[in-house]
Image 1 (tube, rainbow, N blue to C red):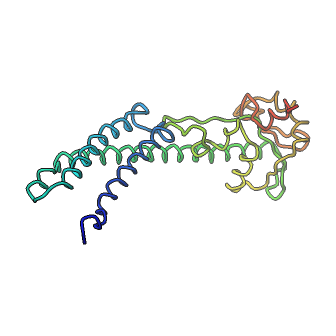
Image 2: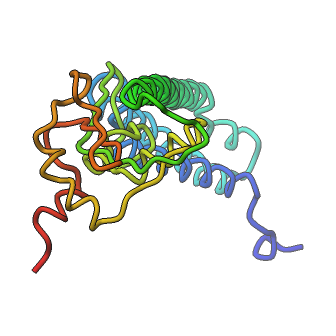
Image 3: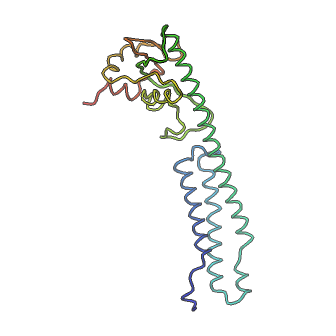
Length: 244
C-alpha cells in the first residue's frame, strides 16, 4: 500500500476528540455550572485553557515532525513526551477536581433543599390539622398558597433552573408545584382551587401574617389558605394585574 493510500492513524483522531471534550467541559463551566466552581467563577476554566493550549501546540508540532521523520532517530527527536505527560496529567487533575467539587456541591445543595422542603411540608400539614378541629384525612380540602418561602444555604444555586430550588419558592410560590409536592410526600387530601375562587380569596390572603407567624394558616370559606411570603407569586400576581 502506498503512503498516499495509508489511512490516518486512529490515535490522531482520539487525541483531537480528547481535546474537543476538554473544550466542551470548559465551555460548560463558563456558561452553565460555573457558579458551583471553587473560588471565582473563571479560575478552573482559565487554568484548563492555559494547560490545554501548550499541550495541543506540542502535540501538533510532534505530529508534524514525526510525519516527516525518515528514521527512528528523527522520530524520537520529535517527541516531547515528558512535557506532554506532565501537562496532560495536570489538566486531567484540574478537570477532575473541578467536576468533583461541582457535582459534590450540587448534590449537597439539592439534598439540603429537599430535606428543608420535607420538613416545611410536615410543619404546614400539622398547622392545618391544628386549624381544623374535626380534620379528616379521608376528606379532600381545597388549599391555596400565597407567596414564597425562600431557603438559602452556603452552597451556590444554579441560576434559572428549578433543579436546586425549593418547591416553596419557585415562581414566587407556585400553588400547583407546592400541592403536587405535598401529594408526593403523602399529604394527598388537598386539592387546588380555581382562579375564580383564588381571586375571591386574594383580599383575605394579603392581610394574613407571613409564615411561620400565628395566623399564617387559616380556613376561609372552606378553603385552607397558607401565606408563605410577603409578595405574591406569578399565579396571584396575574390575578391582581391581569393582562389587558
